[in-house]
Image 1 (spheres, rainbow over the protein chains, first blue to last red):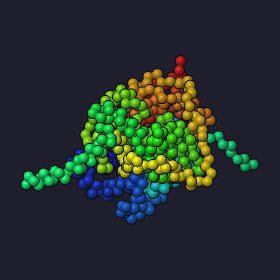
Image 2 (image 1 turned 180 degrees about the horizontal axis):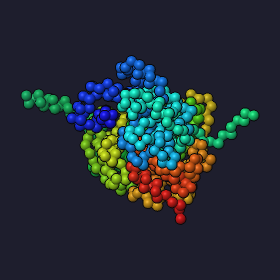
Image 3 (image 1 turned 120 degrees about the horizontal axis):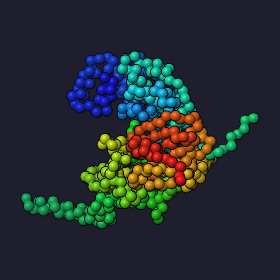
Amino acid sequence: MTKEISALMDGELDPQEAERAIRACGMDEDRKRTWFLYHMIGEAMRGQAPGSLEVPAGVAEKLRGEPSVLAPHRRAARPAARVAIAVAASVATIGIVGWLGSQGGSPVPVAAPGPAVASSAAPAAVVASSSAPAPVVAASSAPVPVVAAPVAAVSGSIEPVSNTAAIQTVPALTVQEYLVAHRQVPSPELYRAVTNRTPVDAR
Amino acid sequence: MRALALAGRRRWLPALALGVVAWGAEAAPPTDAMGWLERAAEAARSASYAGTYVHSNGQRVSTVRITHVNVNGQEHERIESLDGPPFEIVRHNDEMFCYYPDAKTVRLDRRVNARFFPSLFRAGADVVAQSYDVKLGGLEHVLSYDCRWIRLQARDALRFTERMCSEVASGLVLRAKTLGLDGQVIEQYTFTDLKMGPAVAREDVKSLLESRVKRWTTDAQPRDEAKSVDTGWTVTKLPPGFQKVKELRRTLPGRPHPVSQIIYNDGLASLSVFVEPNDSPPRTAEASSEDGTTTFFARPMGDELVTVLGEVPLATAEAVGHSVARRP
């Protein structure tokens, strides 16, 4: 059903399927919540505060305490695609793209803050479970107020924390640096001088 | 009734005459698709324009203000991001000055692969036409200008199909779309406001952010590295239509040694191949991602890590990544 709701929001359903999905949404509390969460994710990704939606009592508060999780990649996960691309609402010209390879091709979700953005407020990226849609976990304290693991949302228990608990941290090799080298124009979030400046010796 | 109709027609005459004068000032629009393509490429370089455009690529959207003038054949351009922290690029031909006021740093680089809407071409129209079937599409009214769509249909599945709406009088591209292999729009540029011609002055392309910081630190390394070197690497099975633009060595943050980079394009789409020691830490599995037109593919190759990044379908990036070899 989650997939249908996602497809409905993306305008990918034909009229009959859409009607069915809409009706199903109206009849079931869990689905309603999923619908609501997906819209919040969408709004957050467009850089809008989720406040423009009527937030059910308690939900917003609960969400605020969770790690930032952005929406799934729209395309179905490919077996070879072990990487998800995350979006920072604040990123200009070039978006933040994080690549965190799972060692040994293990299907276990792996997450880590991209070192290139670890110190910034921008959300970094990650990951990939074998099931689509893959949740994307932002590991930094991003200003994006929204949060929701779509997979968890299906069950109705909004607990992305239980997802992140299983996540191990590995050093990340990030796509950003290649992107900067390719496009030559890093946005402020991605810019890091490579100049060999002699660091001031503290001793 | 007839007199009335005549009077009505007469009233149009001066307007018609003015129209003809205005028409005469601009060259007549080309008659064939290749002519439109050449003119669109030329207009982005030689015209003066200032405007705001929205760029969406996959899940990302950004708003950018661009001011471009051409004085005696010299291109001057100022590009300012309207989203996120302040940042600005001032470009003089291929010299780029990237201002980061928060970091008090100006990053210098020489343009190799960077491109800024509405300047989307990376080679001449003849090169583009080898890989894309160029046809004219319909007329559209955009921002109170008339523009005609130029359709660049990819000749194979190794690249994405493009559409550009070229303003009828000047040729400037007002809107551009890239279609994924399934025909969906995956990347899009569109001006949301635009002025053209003498209203745009040389002063308008001077940095606005420069005065914000008293002492700028200059990061000249990117510019120093933007020179051709022999990396020793090559792509043995390059997709048809792609040509090598440059090979260089880039220092990437956090890496002890420079990374080899080879840049290719087909006149429109480009891709970079990176080769570096696979040791920080070693990667054992292939990885890839796609978002909008941006595709990323990496694979361990012996002691090296090969990475391909570009505006191409994943299959193209994978094919390139699998045919990297030492130059004989």
